[in-house]
Length: 73
Image (tube, rainbow, N blue to C red):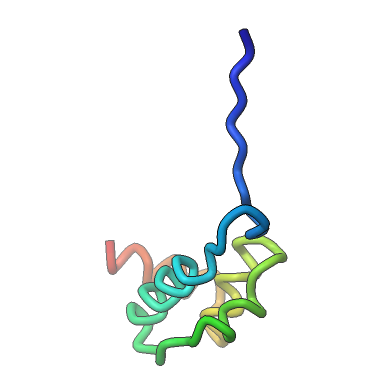
């Protein structure tokens, strides 16, 4: 018997924007950035996680994001 797990990554089965907004704002708080609204986060979604993080943390290089993440862990 085969088992199947399905992931809804594009929001067609559930609306994940509220949860993504919470996650983005939690991440932004670690960088002392203001919170984003759901509509602001919505435009960042759809091109992968890297694009979401880049858009949520403008002006921070990948190295700065990684360094800050290590400090907060």
